[in-house]
Amino acid sequence: MTPSFRLLPLALSLTLLAGCGSQVINPVTGQTERSVMSESAELAEGKKAHEQVMQEYGVYKNPRLQAYVNEVGQKLARESHRANIPWTFTVLDSPEINAFALPGGYVYITRGILAYMESEADMAGVIGHEIGHVTARHGAQRATRQQDAGLGVFAATILGAVLESQGVSGATELAGQTAQGVAAGYVAKYSREQELQADTLGAEYLSRTRYAPDNMVDVIQVLKSQEQYAGDVARAEGRQASEGNSWLASHPSNDQRLASIRRIAAQYKGDYKDDGRQRFLRAMEGVRFGESPEQGLTRGQNFYHAGLGIALTAPNGWRIQNAATALTFVSPKGDAALRMVTLPPKAGSSHDEIIRNAFKPTQGNATRGQLNGFTSTHFVGTNQAANGQAQGVEATIVTGPQQLNYALLYLAASPAARQQAQSGLKSAEQSFRAMSAADTRAARPWQLSVVPFPRGGFAELERQSAPVPQVARQLRLLNGLYGAGAEPAVGSLVKVVTEQ
Image (cartoon, rainbow, N blue to C red):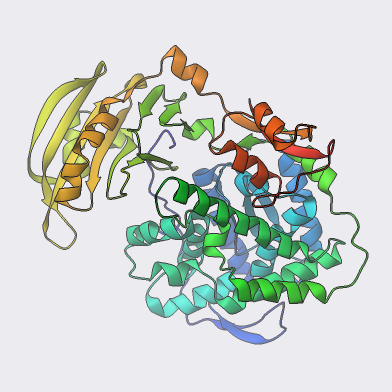
């Protein structure tokens, strides 16, 4: 979680474009289509939205990697159907498996998805697909479809991109926050035809820049391994696999689509010998792996945020979900949670004022106390929901290190679930503490290192690795061999996770 609590503002803060639209020529098809966004408007609003994406997600502060990704992206863009517009390629400081694009030539790829790519050509496949969405003006087409739904034109486009970056699970929450009444899935996803067109264009742009188009297939296979890994871990932990926040979650890739990609790639014949694997691995050396220290680090059942100076521990069996806007401890059944958010100064100067401003209670009781040396106030009461019905509210406000205020919110699907999770909720809350010396030692960030594959195989590589969750599975996943019994040749370069 970040040091301040923000609800993603992109869809709500943009200038809305009005009008019935005009006829434009699609750069890819050459056909005339009605659009509510001219190219000049697309470029201007895309620039504004880009600045907000940078503020919200954060650029990964690695100039060498940024320059490398931009170089590959610009090479692809020069061979695209819209080489005339300015293109911007940015690596976001996020561990999520994501890539997305905004109208106007703004393409984003996370360090999280890069970690699981095997070569420069794989990375180019992801970028080429997103370029395809921009060149075919899919964002403008979606905005045009949304005009009659009552959602602001460019806001619809930006919301769609943000929802894609959030994945399906984030789409529902964010769509609810906008209160626009538009189905999250409709806004979040491109149509099947648009996805296939982006695949086709991506393969074409790869071929034009001397990358093998079948790397489009490799990318989907890598991401399908992510799905398999998530399912295997979930089953091992006795829970249902979550779709999560991933590029795959918002880019459908069933067997029919994968077969289509294979057919598309097979149409290209050429000399594609250099996949840029060595260049890619050099660029990935030292890249941060997993969560960012700026958003806090999860280590086992513990959460550490050195910048805020706080630590918490989840009860056994509870899962930790660390997002940009909140930290959530989820019960084993997934029907209750303790969510912590950092409150901005405008929330109030006292706990009573915060409770009034944040919860707008109609009734309730506040109990003063201490939480591991920090002043706290536990509130139980009711407020009025959007539908006019009374709803229960339970939360603890605590003033932690640096005089920052936090809200620890009790969430449950039902009173029965709340009662069953009571001890876990209290245990999680009571773990809120200032970071100790031991906590600081445990909160060392992880990074990728590139090493020769050892004679001892993956078992030896595991001993060289930092203690990441599911380390044996993760190392195979990182090196493109998940679910396979094969091992790389001894001495060939592979990725491993080390402590920074």
